[in-house]
Each structure stands twice: as C-alpha cells, then as structure tokens.
Amino acid sequence: MAFDFKKEYKEFYLPPQKPQIMDLPAMNYIAVQGQGDPNEEGGAYQQAVGVLYAVAYTIKMSYKGSHKIEGFFEYVVPPLEGFWWQEGVAGVNYTNKSGFHWTSVIRLPDFVTPEDFRWAVGEASRKKKMDCSSAQFLSLTEGLCVQMLHIGPYDTEPASVALMDDFITANGYENDLTATRLHHEIYLSDPRRTAPEKQKTVLRHPIKKRQ
Image (cartoon, rainbow, N blue to C red):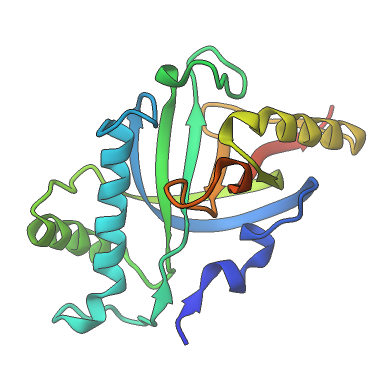
C-alpha cells in the first residue's frame, strides 16, 4: 500500500477543530513563488499549482522510468499547501486578494535529493511541454506553531484565526508572523469538487513565548 503522509502524520495534516500547539520539524517541498489573486482564472497562482503537480507526479512516477531514486517508495502525493503574506499587513487581509504574495508548495518525501529534484523539473518540462523552471527545492523548519482545522469557505478563516489568537494568548504565547515565518494553509479539499461550507483547511501560524 502506498505511503500516505496525511494518514502517517495525522498530527500535521488532520488536527482537531480547536487550536493546538505543535513544534514542526524540517520538511522539504516543491515550491513556486508568486503574487496576485488566487481566484484569477488562468492567473499566476493557477499556473503555479500546475507546475507543482507536474513536478510532483514526475517524481511519484519516476520508478516506472530510467531515473531511479535511491530509497524510493510508492506514496500518495501530499496535499497542496500555501504560505501567504501581504505588504504592510500583519496576518492576512482577505478583502484584498490581489495584494497576496504566496509560496505554493507540495511536500517532498525525504528520499528526494536536490539532484533528483533538478531531474524532475527538467523531465516535467519536457514531458508536459510546459516551463517548470519556476519550481524550487525548499527546505523549511517551521518550529513552534499553533494550528487547527478550519471547515468552511476561505473567507471565513478569520473566525478560526481569532480562536487561535485567543488560545495562544491564554497559554502565554504570541504570534510570530515575520518575513520568514508566515500564515500557512494546507488544503485537504478540492474546491472544484467540494461545497464551500464543507471545505477543510489546516490553518497554521508561527508563535513564540510571550515576553
């Protein structure tokens, strides 16, 4: 049976609908950076997601070709994730989607090396006949965070963020949103197939002990 990150690491991908504090370890990702409204049809965000999945599935299916990755095991491609920020805004202003900066990511299995990644970008570009050169190999340690499962439309996320804020304050922490520690979302539902009120999104914010 293929390894499923969501099932094997439930603490990261399937949190409860109430805030919890986590200390996140180092993880590697396929990453594409950009700016603009994620809902724009054919816009930069949708193009970035296309690049991410092209590279992700090239790696997933590599065992069927001539490029053999040491330590490879069959796995389910992890869910799409995103780090979001806006210039001059602490947190996220959901009413100004055109002002979004984002780094969209898909987690990589640990057996994927930077050399394997470069091969996959080139192979995806060749096979899919699309430019995948915007994809980057990203290593990230998020560290201490608060997270919870949000159910509902993306525009109602502020209610869940408010719960997280109240929780960390009550437990002696504060938000640590910076240029390198960002608002993080993990998308467990496909918005094309899921009613907005049923969409599941993991929300995660970096925190630190309150001084």
